[in-house]
Length: 542
Ligand code: ZN
Image 1 (spheres, rainbow, N blue to C red):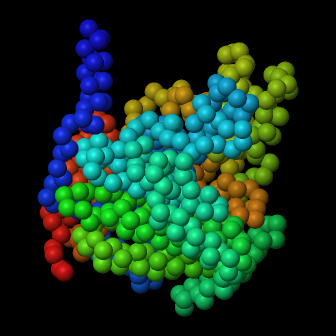
Image 2: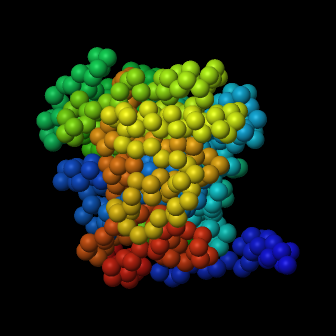
């Protein structure tokens, strides 16, 4: 009796495109703007809230705020963005890391990028694709329910733009390093060509150093990192034509917001009677700056002050052109500051001798192995055992790796994929999840490691700071998991929103927008917004 089930499933897949469009509820906002500020941790948000004067001040003052969690262990950009508009943990989205290792792929390079298509690897680099994403986004569901809706996604990073937008988005754009580009957009918009021309003109001019606002001046005490780089001195002066400095500065987010506004104008987002549109924005500069300079210094202070101002301009543009719109602001993960700043007592850098290669080199002689037995990007997260080895040898490699890792003072725990796989995907408040439950929420049997290594809380995974990489995220700990989660539609009912997860955003918006979601297709739940009508029927003040 399998066939009818399959037929029914096929029909269900075919239905949304052919069924009559479901009208938007009269209370739905005509435009929903979902903003992900890459690496904006709850710690940063709380620390800077009193200093905001622009768009972030408006959201801080007027939005309904939840204590947000990117609940899973793999607190990286791609998994984080995959949760925001799918309503699903990475275990379900399939986006379990920025990069994973797939030893079965038919090409020499076994590392797979989250937003590529391994079946269509070009001669060099990759083609941006959603082939790895296993679920639809809210935009996909919105387009299926109401084909007249428009879905636009713009981000500094390709993986952010792709994961937020989805397969049926009308426009998906990201920064290539020199301009906004896309291979996911069938019909290019003139707004993008104009934005790129304006950016090129701006890039051709040098930029003066920013003048720190008073609250940033106390952060201007210089810190020297191992290797000699000095922090708290960069005020983002830029030479003419320096693309790298453009991306690694507040200019990147300003350009992303400007393109978002230009596309909103061109596509008349939120201005068409009876339609509900979705605009997703991935603001990547906070992440680039946090990686290069850490999160506690002058550079981050300048970035957040600039973002606050530029977001204020963007929202005022929507006030004028759209009027009634909704904003959701969150982040893909948090961050751990450079330990040299002393922001977090006891924090230190990972032992530089603890690498995958060193571990592999230590294990192989005892087992009589010559070829690499352990594969992975680094210690912390997924480790893979060579699939070329017989299973008894694989078992011995794993046991030996576990023994050595557990003896190291930087390691909190080591988990086997097969054991994680047996756990149910966790539910309930993310703050109470155990470490194995966090790992389970971003575990996929075909993509995750044979082992999962958890570093101790406060261990900065970057052993040796480089020119643009001094601090990072990616851990199971709350400094990487806790993110702002704000809903705004004009001044909202106040009151404690309580704890929520980023996977709750999509089901909440689906309810507000009247987009059907079959039971069991999302991990999140529609948030119980206190005095819910306030979000559905914004008091008309203008
Ligand atoms: Zn990120």
